[in-house]
Image (tube, rainbow, N blue to C red):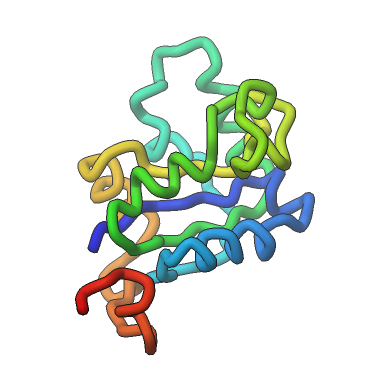
Length: 151
């Protein structure tokens, strides 16, 4: 099973879409391993988006992610990173296909509702930034063989 970080960005929280979008991930078969509501500090935002530090949009990106509360979580499942990114759709809501989360709920490139890790290396780094020791849980969901296979 693979872990991925998911951030329900301030626009998602403000639009009250967290529950309905989280339900889509659960319906797909992903398991919630961690979940919390926080106000992102400038320091955490800059660490998370460090690869964009020298880009002209960095300041706006940090202002956006720190502009309101976010819900941050860890999802687990078979190929969770690929599954989540497919469900999210293209970065720009304008370009995202109908049926994807951004295609259904976003019409912006910046206000695109969610962040999902793009690789196992990014997921490991990001999860360690947002969650401390013991905050990512490992548990079994009854009937998980019906979701993940394994018979």
